[in-house]
Length: 281
Image (cartoon, rainbow, N blue to C red):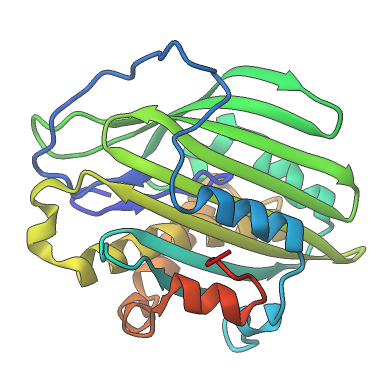
């Protein structure tokens, strides 16, 4: 992370961590409003539409057999610094095994680069969903720059044993403005799971904007690649030591052609319409 923007997946979580060389520090506030409500953004209803329409049309377009992980950069009209990424990979393991990794949030710091802490603050259960509030702290190894701290709200829907949905949303923290995302798991067979993730987040970028949108996007995508690939490696190789998973996923992410993905980005309304979801309605 250092001077990189990282958004970790954990459940994802994908946390945003910054190249924010200058950013005012704000302690994590405990707001008085509903503890289970995150900050709304343009993509809050979009994620609801994706969940309701699943599986979306043309899902295969997210995947290429030549890549263990496929990502698509998705832009937001009027804000080139609003990061949007669709990701897909196939994990050679049962769906329950993937969930076993994702549900142990406290283990994320072992596998996601620079993540210092992941702590469940509170949980509640409903008929078909489990809710969690989770605190994440990401190290920013720059003198006098405080660590990045965020509180996220998660919901996990497990009513269908062959299809599990993780929804997450930013609630409070240092630098994020908004973050709407989700992970969708589908059992393709008893030994194969399709993993699809969406992340849409904006932040107070500070002077990081002097690096330009392309660099911020590329570094953000490499952060997502690292965390996703770490999940794939650990789930497929349960006996691997966390350091081996971390090192191999970092090596993979550093070589990932993120700049090419940035150059081939697609505007959100166009991308979702091509997949059967009309954002104009």
